[in-house]
Length: 488
Image (cartoon, rainbow, N blue to C red; front, side, top):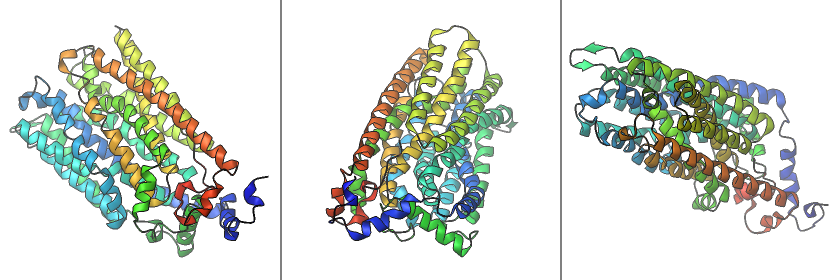
């Protein structure tokens, strides 16, 4: 028998507080209604935010085929790669402070502010006339986009329980491959426009930047800050929306998200969490191929012999394949309550795709490889988002942990933006080989993470972590609470 059921020293209120966790579906009708309302009132805006985020950071790859390097005299050396790289410097630095500011400045205002701001910057890139101007714009773009991914993950975790969150993460993240497909189609048309001195590539930034600004303004009026402040919910629905999140935390917190206050103890708890550092390592190596694939897919396809508009159009099918796979895997991941196995499977598929690019001289085989890469790599990223958020609690631990993970992971951009160089055209063997190596390491670290989480859960099942209940304030244990179970 578990010792916590017969040990008289266990605090008398421990069992009482843990009981709700045994019945997380205590109001299934209201749960279903809440999820339906959140899906209608939140997910469309998060989907749009991530769609425009990926379009506006990656459209420089489309502009490259529409004459940007020639116009700005950066068609030789590594200047173009440097313009890609500088985006990620502020993008990385603002992650943690931005996550902490999310609730302070109200998520329903802060996130729309970021998207509107970067939309203005994207629009202004169309006016640049030299390399320095392009670099400044890319730095500012990274500054305002930097808080989006962590902000969206934390925002989702305010509304959905852990077992429901991955599917929603997949629904918004599938905008990433869709942006590649949509961006390729749009760029193929915009790259033909010539008005006065603005010929071809500036129109990609003008139109896509303006669309982002309009969408950001719309978000200001419709995105709620927290469940307790959602105007589309009744009073009863608001109360249950907050209560069910406390139940889902399995005793790790007794406070609603509206009531939590920042404390440095949450920062240290995040820093001392092994699962956070393992996720950071996994995501770092995963993003090497993901970022390089998103930025350089038009370049990879042009290396097969296709040019300009044709190369832009050929980027659409692989990205659409990635779009559908993200949705499917997110759905099944929540069904089986597992993340790691899907990440491992995706990395294996991605490795096969890069091997096809490396060893084959036939364009049909190479192009098929791009499908495997898109299907394998894109689906793994939302899995990691859910994995991080599922295994850190409460809100401020999650905010700090997610910020650290994303900051470390995005450092992979320093590799990803420099592995596809003009001198390696048309085969780009160096870039493909680096991507394969990164995915192999991703696979190994995923196995380590799954092993650690399973080991820790078994210790809690045996009551070997119950001593933590006597070592301080029970309500400050967060995800270290004996009743909390990690998602594997």
